Image (tube, rainbow, N blue to C red; front, side, top):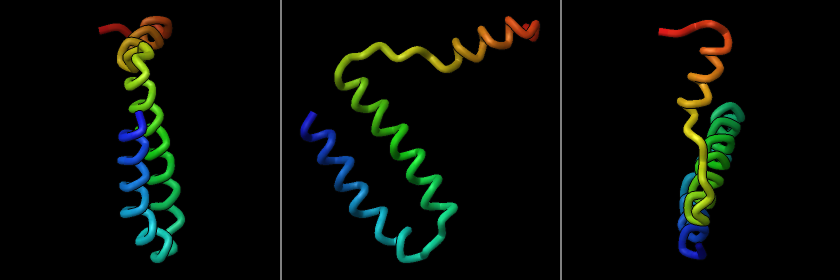
Length: 69
């Protein structure tokens, strides 16, 4: 777990300064959102928490709306 967090901190230390220097808020926001999602999923998988498939959730939603193939 420690190595996982350390790896994400190293990635953040490498990727974040150029984004801040460019002052491009759009790219910084997108990077931040994706980084948090990926980091969260990696930590949950490391802790062996079952993560439901997004495709199964989309399939259920489409079936409830009557959109089947």
